[in-house]
Length: 390
Image 1 (cartoon, rainbow, N blue to C red):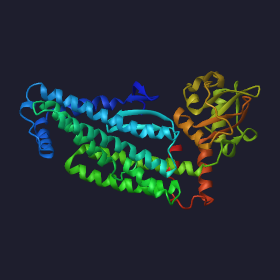
Image 2: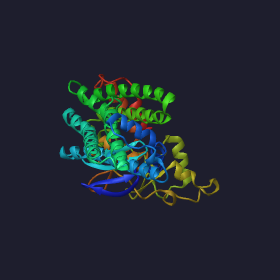
Image 3: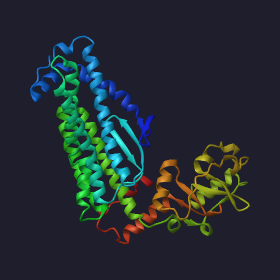
């Protein structure tokens, strides 16, 4: 979720996802078209007498809808800053805060594993939302009855921010309540096990929310889907991290002595024959023993069959290399492969010399062996966590 950067605060980039540019006017329209009914709800809850008919005529209803929608998402942004600033106090780096279809997401470079830290970070957002609701309600009370439009906006924001805080505290991992649940579970269990348990609760919550949404609001069905996927994704990532704890690239790479390589002057025909015989789909390319590029099956496929004897590996290889240090964490290799969309990484030492290659196959093999050794028997026996490597 990259989004369009619109600024930064406290050193944290603020981004807008493209879906936000759709949902903001949609929310403004939904609120504006229902101003009279919403005013009635506010009157019943807060004991006021906002004239719903008066504020729902002409262009005023759309102005109020726009103001309420902007205020709502501003509250969501502050909610995410609540999480982020507390996390920064603990030393965690925040990549960005992004507003999107379902509210906001604060992207952490590292997920807290200390249960006390995660608990504090998780509750900080809802506390900020409740505080915004209280401030909005105070402003609502201070306004004279003649300021019906402003009362409506503040009353709506007071109601919605408190409601969002309550909803976020439901145990739908990876929502705030689910993270609180994981933090509490992690008091007496390994972090990976606590994540698995919280994720299962989150999936059940998502299923129930989806059923409810089918009868009352299809938006909730979409939200349930993303909660389910988020719970599954974070649980898988946690399993990977626990599996590869203290494992470095050197431990799992194919060493230089056992590495299949090609020379730059090899023809594409010869390359494809080697790929067929050796069952490899990618090779480091060497010139006088030095790494100069990588060539893959996709590169070779781009050459017409009649021209494959004439084309050489150095004609089709990629010389923009993504490499990794042999002492880097295995999880760093996984993240780099995902970020760059590659299936293998040349392993290069501090002198720039090729010392090996780590591939998705190496990672999958290492994952299965480590799990089979029984070091993670407390976790469910599933290969779901490695699926993202394939």
